[in-house]
Image 1 (cartoon, helix red, strand yellow):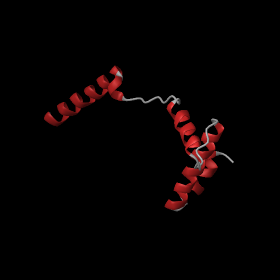
Image 2 (cartoon, rainbow, N blue to C red):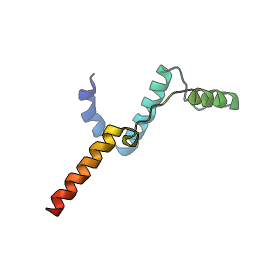
Image 3 (tube, rainbow, N blue to C red):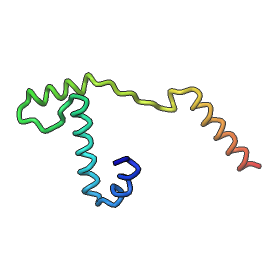
Image 4 (tube, rainbow, N blue to C red):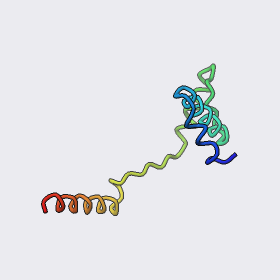
Length: 86
């Protein structure tokens, strides 16, 4: 089943079922990445999970760090100001 076939069904789920689906997908993706997010009974497993998460790279993009985005936003603000003042 493709995503486009699945989305209409997902949109009809209750709020609680959508949260359950998110939880299921998170666990499935983590498992595919070799990381178990299942609740652990002992602290050694919890520490192993924390170590796995700490070693995972995450890329965070922000328009504030991208000069072209900063310039584009500035240009839009200047153009909007000119339109309101005209």
